[in-house]
Length: 75
Image (cartoon, rainbow, N blue to C red; front, side, top):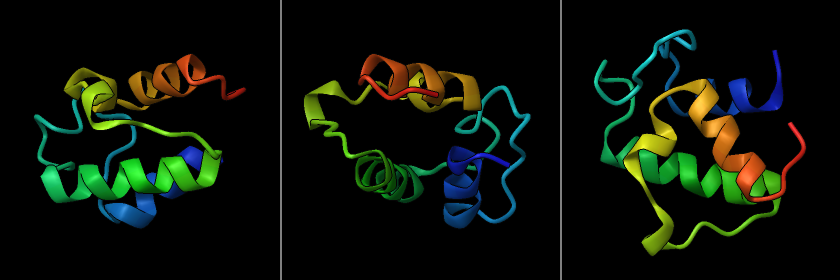
């Protein structure tokens, strides 16, 4: 299990990491999303500004990885 998967499971213990839509499937609500953003910022030493938050960037494991890559994180 990689760091991103651990972060997601710490925020939402019952998350199905293979889900194609964490939000639509009810794993990430607004509170969990804010916690996830904070954890990503802290763990990967990046900044995600409010105006940059796009829901589609948090729908799946792959979309979050793509966001991190855009931020310069090697995944």
